[in-house]
Length: 388
Ligand SMILES: Cc1cc2nc3c(=O)[nH]c(=O)nc-3n(C[C@H](O)[C@H](O)[C@H](O)COP(=O)(O)OP(=O)(O)OC[C@H]3O[C@@H](n4cnc5c(N)ncnc54)[C@H](O)[C@@H]3O)c2cc1C
Picture 1: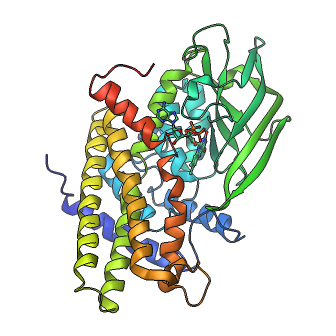
Picture 2 (picture 1 turned 30 degrees about the vertical axis):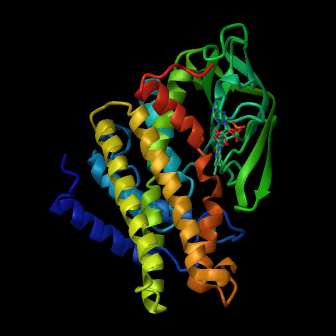
Picture 3 (picture 1 turned 120 degrees about the horizontal axis):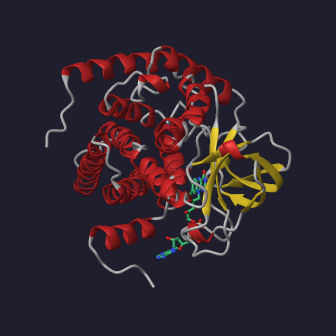
């Protein structure tokens, strides 16, 4: 396996970096902040990326992409995640909501939903988790009653990122047949978030404002042409969608950038000779390289048209644990001052390491927890029995 990028891909990376250097302002630190500049900035950046054909570059041309290789798309992901994802919520459209519609949607749904995503104009959210259905997602109870030409939805979702952005649409998982075993009888609806009966309530956490929401659905009417895939067979879409999601996030790139910051900090503060510091940083760097290659393996399978379920889980396990390890090592290296938050004038590295550490506390939960990933590897990868 040769994972080296070609000269053309490296040239593209240089061009993209120059573009981002010019476009991403110093104040940008991701979406989950109380800063009214964040949403207009990310919308404008996505418009510019779309103009250059860089937003959905690996999508087929008929869906508004440029037909570029998945490797060029991987370069975009790496450069974006290294800069706190200036595409904001759009990365979800590109990485998995769009691809799931491409794979399972009708031609009408594809022509309706994909072009606005390719232009960077719409925000989608993912309505999967419920208060009593997280890891055990198939236990979800949000009910969609089949009324012929429409469904009526009642229930509650939670942890819905970007719902308050506000999201325009939701990829909503619902139970359409409560009489069958739990993995069956589930369907996916494409729901207009302005439909009467939808209430979004933000949840503030230590990771920052605007990261999470509750979404309440009371007698929400969804037209039948917004059913994605077959009725009662939504679980296949969930597996494909979550796999694309796991591959689609270049978490290692963000970890790599923080490792670079820590190396610079160690050198600038006379810590570069300390054997403990060298040990920790070298160890993190090795883990970063391994996480990157594991992601590349999953991407290469995706490029071949496969759904790399086990490989995506393995990559995810390494990536999320790397992020947490980098955050912990960073706080230790900076000492007590490392606990000062961004915005405090005495905070070393502008509080970036503290912010990184805080944000990554839940990273081993998002998109399926670490334990859930291990279960996938145990069962599907190693052939161990399904959990009782
Ligand atoms: C940053 C972030 C963003 C998110 N964004 C979204 C979103 O946009 N849309 C959405 O729908 N959801 C979202 N989620 C929710 C996420 O998918 C759930 O948090 C996750 O699936 C875990 O579910 P839970 O929180 O209910 O925890 P639980 O399922 O209650 O798990 C609690 C703990 O028990 C462990 N556990 C559970 N079952 C097992 C088992 N069988 N074996 C071993 N250990 C087990 C888990 O690993 C975990 O440590 C997001 C979560 C995070 C952290």
